Length: 154
Image (cartoon, rainbow, N blue to C red; front, side, top):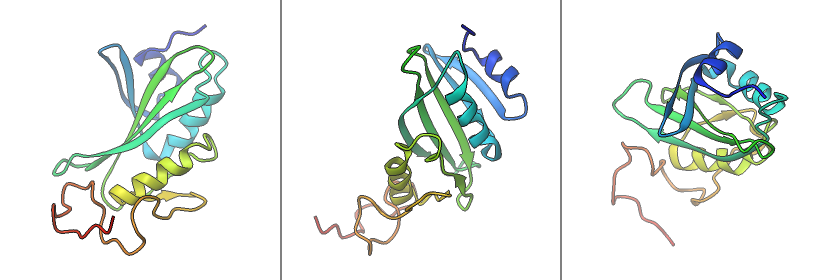
C-alpha cells in the first residue's frame, strides 16, 4: 500500500497541489480549484487509498485575507482508515465545482455552505437554501454579516 504523505500527494498531483503538510498527525492539502474534481476522483478511485467517504464539507471565512475563503473537504477511506483534509482557497465571487458526482453525500453539505457563506457550487443539482428561510438576507457565517441585525423567525 502506498503511504499517504505530503510528498506522495505532490508527486501524484504535481500541478494540482499547492501545498501539503501534516499537523498534529493530520494531512492537509491545498489544491487548485480548477483541478479539484480531478483530484477528488483520483483519490476516490486510487487502489491503495480509496477515499470513498466525504465525512464533512465546510468553509472558513478568513476576511480580510485574500483569498478570503477556504472550502474544506474532510475525506475518509473506509477500507484503509486513512483520513485527509483537502482545501480550496477562493475569493468572494469564485464558483467552486460541485463534488456531488464524486461523493453524493456532498449535496446537503454544499447547500449548507451556500446558505451560510454564500459560496456557489457549479454543477450542483439543487443549490438552494437548506437551513434558513428563502427570504433571509445575507449569509450569517460570513465575517462581514451584521451580528444581531437579522430577524430570525424561529
